[in-house]
Length: 176
Image (cartoon, rainbow, N blue to C red):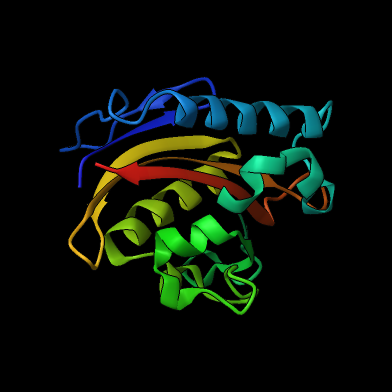
């Protein structure tokens, strides 16, 4: 797995990983930028927006690529409160509920493929601990043997405007 990590205003590259940002370009970059702008607008003068502020109607075409993760019980047992149809497809169709979405309450570690979970867990930890959005681009091989490249962003949410309680995320992906 190779990848590139970026913060909303800072960038950091994990040891042993190389940038893939040029491979996941165009609409993926615009969508991630839109998600960050949306988060900033929701936040306003506060430190963080609240999970209740997230409006699917404002995210329209991006909503299937959105996930919301609860950190109530810690990052190791982070659970989906929402995972769109494209997130379910990214994780593997067998993980989708009847509506095609990831069932609320499903553990993130049980959903994301193992190489992706390692990366997402790192993003969750940094975004929650540093209380700032964090993005990444990377690639992995799906169960069917196809390689996928993706760009993601994870943005902190807070119910008390102090501690990060949830994470709003977007993952855009395509076959390599």
